[in-house]
Length: 265
Ligand code: 8IG
Image (cartoon, rainbow, N blue to C red):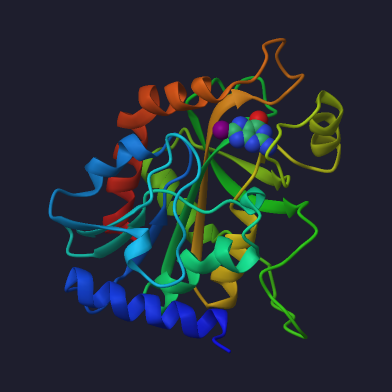
């Protein structure tokens, strides 16, 4: 049987062959609302479909694009950008969720930038506000790791990378990201609970990927784009169109943030 790690190696070989890039340096996963920022990362690129590589399945959510872009940045870094992710709620299993991370590690990436769109608990974070993830609470009740693999998650979201991000944008706040399984949004009571246990952001991704990236020895940066106030924080109902719109209007800022960060890493 092929292990998830072997499958990731196969994907990395296919990636090298299809892009002509032997080794990538920095991987980025673009979450909900982040797609419009991709062009700011560089114009010199090759794009492939995730389904061109072993182990990837087609994108499932409207506004999520099943593509991978290999970008040669202006500062000479080979960026591996996933324009969408597989979410835990798709039911394809945790290995499918973290396959991009393991592929990036096998492709040579030593840095993993995980972005997402999420709900915010702090009413001062208006839709379109980026927030650095300082730590997470994983409420999925699962892990990408199997067996007696006691990986340390201290400083999972690198304080070094958070400081670099603040050099680019000193107005960036930090928060604790709470991953719920989804796909439904939280009830107001669940959002209240998230706050009581120490959370600032609620979403449906990122924590399992961060754990897999740490296992692979990568340095991790997490950035959430608050696209809506979490349920019960405002009196407005939540909808996916709002999420996409917040991304479109925040695109210039997110693009500037990522592209100015890359040369510093
Ligand atoms: I975008 O309010 C986005 N994703 N769980 N809650 C959860 N996920 C989200 C939310 C939200 N907004």
